[in-house]
Length: 134
Ligand code: DAT
Ligand code: MG
Image (cartoon, rainbow, N blue to C red; front, side, top):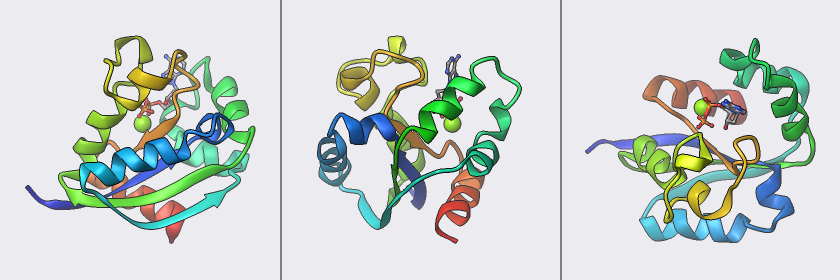
């Protein structure tokens, strides 16, 4: 197991629904460290860069509107195998397949409003940490 850094972003519905503490508690109880964190308001160009792989999808405008709807809580999370470990804790993109015990499985009922982003590879974690924390 390698110690990894991953970019985690709690999306606007996590803040609106006051689930920040709940989600952060899960990350801390798992044993990961939050080494940097900040509340930020995303803008359209930053969203387009972050979700470049989805720009041509029919749901992209809805995703953009959602991510512009309020601040997000950006974090760098560190721990053994933290990239896949956080993905496991999040649950799959399709919330209907997310099992109880996962963040999306416990708190999300809609594919768009799925509370949390986590990097999906070592390469993307490095890119996303640079993008949001420089
Ligand atoms: P993930 O957030 O699990 O890494 P992703 O990177 O493929 O998933 O997609 C980014 C976000 O885009 C996802 O959290 C919600 C939205 N999204 C993805 N697939 C979708 C779909 N089929 N319908 C609606 N929104 C979708
Ligand atoms: Mg993704």
